[in-house]
Image 1: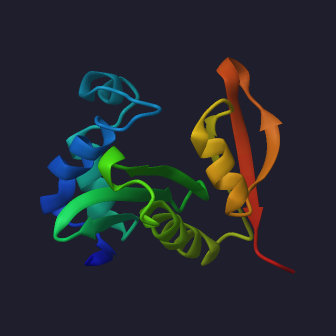
Image 2: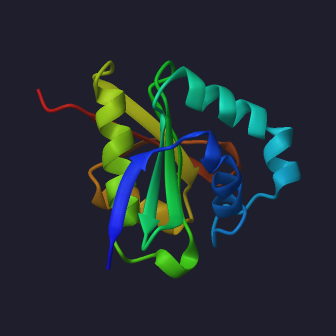
Length: 146
């Protein structure tokens, strides 16, 4: 099986939205994403400003992506299409986002639903829970080894 990771380009914007709206957990529609400021224009701007989005492909099919916000020091998104779960794409995508953020931050963070599968996934990757947030979310942090 041919699996590859690469930096996203402008031709990936539709695929990013396709992946994001087809996930099993934390599903949001295009309209819901727009309500929180995640629009094709916002993704275009992010891609043009910095290499902050990565695409995982399986046999040439865009199967997942991760996105990081360097200014905030956070992993903004990490999603894999359901039919490609279990292939290690999430781990690879998270490694890309983490390495990117650790270039400028000693400690990085992300948030997810406490009751999600992602909670266990992030813990397995060494992320530490630091705060329970309103509406059932949890904040995780990860620091560079001292």
